[in-house]
Length: 311
Image 1 (spheres, rainbow, N blue to C red):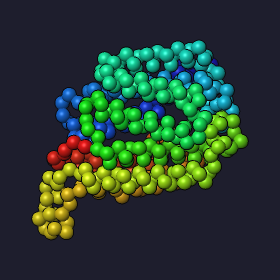
Image 2: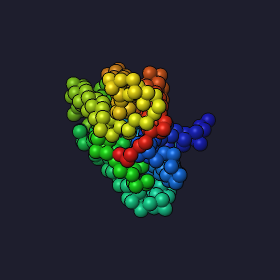
Image 3: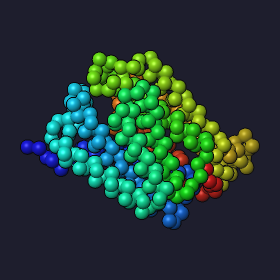
Image 4: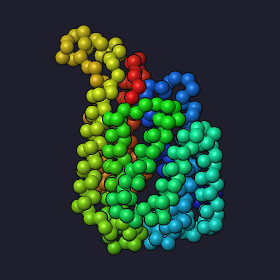
């Protein structure tokens, strides 16, 4: 017997909501996380983006139902399996999209335009843009960038150009890695996505390598130019002991962890295990540990008694 509520939950892909935590990036790096009045609107923005993203996932599954049924992994999606009627799926998608736009307009008119733009871009992707090589990767990556911008808009935060460059690089790294793993999983002869036939393993490998390098380098430049001034007693003590141990670029301490995380994820890509980045991020213990350590270091450096300027 089909458990319809459970299948509906699978249909909206809540595991993919982990990508929407990108909306908190501007809040954290602008130093406003602990300031009253900033966290609540970002949480609402996160909820709204969850609904908008789920609406696009359902819409895409509706269009790809027949192709997904031939895919070794996607064949288990509710619409492809036939356990959720297409009419019901279309209704769910419409309700989620309408609700997200309604709530977004109440939160901020500019945020409403961003959510609307995101929905239209994803509709275009589902209809035809996903079949265009290179363009499909750029569209996937743009989703991450839009999320970061949306989080900045909702609190009127300034974003450093180095931070934006890092976001773009990481987004392209994840998007090209997704295509590389998908091609490795289904092969060129699969009929699940026509753009895959126009890629080669070697080309996607070069994309992954290029954007991996860009990701850690742009983060390194960001930590060099945008680190907060030293104010922790521990670091001040080191400065008193010797100028050699003086550190006024504290975020640079996260660079080794960043490099490890990128190297680990790249190894998963070449093992064809990164078709769903959000799933790998939650399951691979080394990646989870490195991302968790990176997050703790960033919070400690930015909020452990250090004076933080805007990005």
